[in-house]
Length: 270
Image 1 (cartoon, rainbow, N blue to C red):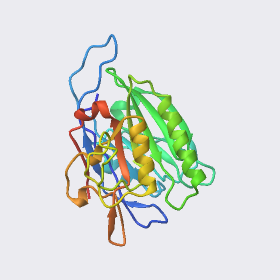
Image 2: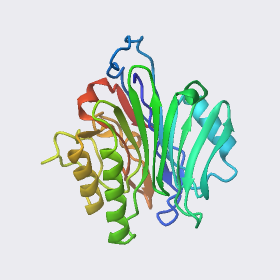
Image 3: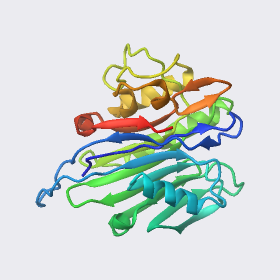
Image 4: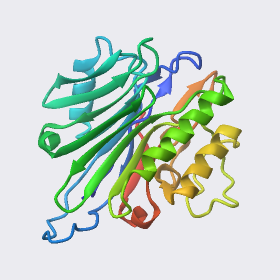
């Protein structure tokens, strides 16, 4: 059941830290497929966000306030830098489910609004870069995947491990379930669409790099549309990363291509 999806992406404080300055980005969609044996409910707004937080320490209240103001139902977080695998109340009814490594680096999370807390039926904490939260939305099961891909300077082994694990996560999701992959994928798609017209809407920034090629290959393999490339926006509403005056787009919201028509908007909010 999606009617409005708002993805939150941030411009980072520095390339090395991956810390982002708040710039919510949004996508909007409509209701999903009905589950067998269940009546179709009235269409409702469903706003999601993705945010590289830099660190969550001391920022829980600030995050809850941001999500409340933007009327976000579900938020995907990257670079939380919290250890362990736990849940925490943030305030304003928002609950954080998170997963981090022993080093206190990386870390991902999913924030759920109060109305959806009792809809959580499964949580898969895959690594400090990947986790999945499954929601039973009556009309369909909705899988929220929070993803934080290795940066350009990371080893090829780290990158390969990430994409292999994300492959495994996607393969665990039934074809009749909805899926939203929300996260910092650290790849530059570029404006060219050749070979990827099915998943790339053409509204992107700059030139493609190898990491962007990996993102597109993943999207094509699982028939996932990169929603924030399908809406014509000003550069400031496309760019999710800024450094040295250069703006790029590396944070994305992906949905099944067959459900792209349900998405009504996607943008970065400076």
